Length: 170
Image 1 (cartoon, helix red, strand yellow):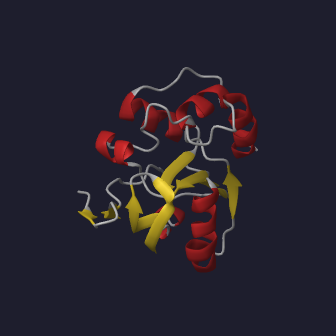
Image 2 (cartoon, helix red, strand yellow):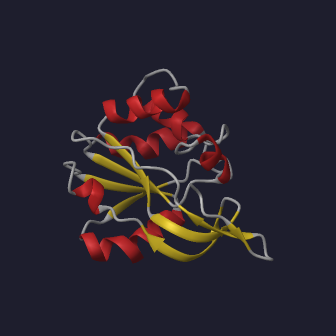
Image 3 (cartoon, helix red, strand yellow):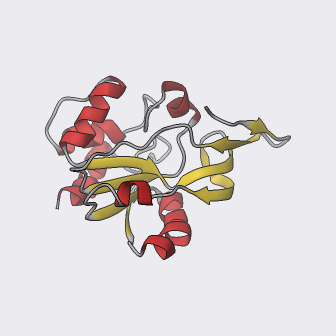
């Protein structure tokens, strides 16, 4: 369950409520920062209907858009993709990565010990920075920064995101 305590500035302390998605065939790990309020509500990664993560991957792999949590899980696993977030907990205002404070990293060894992860990617500037600060020194694995698929990243069109995400197929 989400441990959410709201402060006077609208910030909430959130404990990551979602399990990672991976299996023994996962070769690529894609990390965000922390699930948004909508993603926490629907119980899955990149769950906001305006987030372009799933449309980007569907276009990248030339498949139809996966619908619902089960289809999205199957899609990710079929393509050797593990999903989780850099943070186990933080204080955050809504979905604003810029507001994150009190960041505590997830124990990524759960995935690294169970899957042959070849490359790590972080979606967005904040996820990349937090990974570099909190995780890379522990695991010795650098992450490749990907642009945020959030609708708030309006400067990136879907075609631009697909091109940027092509690196996960390499």
